[in-house]
Amino acid sequence: MEERHYRPSLVGPLMLIGAGVVLLLNQAGLLPWNVWATLWRFWPVVLVLLGIEILVGVTRSKPVYLAALLLSAIILVGTVAYATYASQLGNLFPAGQTEQVVEAMHDADRGDVTLKLAAGTLLVNALQDSPNFLEGTLQYGRNSRQAVRTATYEAGALSFTLEAGNRNGSFWSPFDPLGERWELGLTPRVPIHLTVTSGAGDMQLDLTDLQVTDLELKGGAGRTSIRLPQAARWTSGSIAAGVGEIEIIVPPELGIHMRISKGLGAVRVQNPRMASEGEYYWTDGWDTAENRADLTIQAGVGAISIR
Image (cartoon, rainbow, N blue to C red; front, side, top):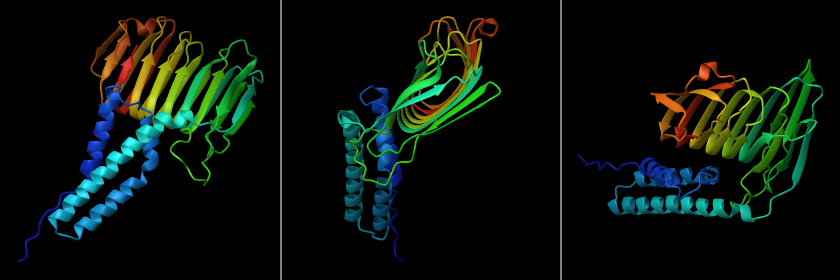
């Protein structure tokens, strides 16, 4: 009987090793989290590695297997190195056009804001001395399409949605700006239900002076920083992230209760007011505080810090 030689898989172990090395460098502060926004654009490399593994499967030659293993490792390391280089230099290249966004109040006494960004940077804060409901600037990458926005007003409720347009079919260079850069200001005068979805990138939400009563946030890969409202009487919300760092900044005036479900990563508590037990974190007297928040946080891979 002809002897069969077992050849272990190439793709799975290499992908795990590569992802682990990148995450280790992220955690050590040697590699920015936004490298994941570039890495996901190189997903066809997985097909190349699978093709190499299939070719190796039809041969029993040990030298061919070792050569394929070396080639696969070189391809994977080269991809990570190139993505890192591209993510660091991308902001040196000129961005595309910019667009101003303005939405009037329409006598609204409450609002519902939905932001859907595919990849890029999102900055949200409170408007200062503005009569409008929302103001901001959208900065596009060279291959981006115009964002789609809709607004409806009915019975005192203003609903506003801003969604990134699909990228067109032109050639993409890794040195292009990574998606869009949205800088948006919201009115602090009315309660707001805020929903944010992002595929990859950096999100910085400064809700300090806003009346955000409901917060729903879903992020894919990247860094998320949230300054919670200090004057909203009640804020409830859920935060979900795949790969990246989550930073929660708690104002001194806010009582807070959080349930944190994490995958791979650590929870760092840097706020002396916080107590914890298992998955639960809270401040003393949070349930009787004048301004309070109740959050559920689900994280896949990455660090969570509470300040």
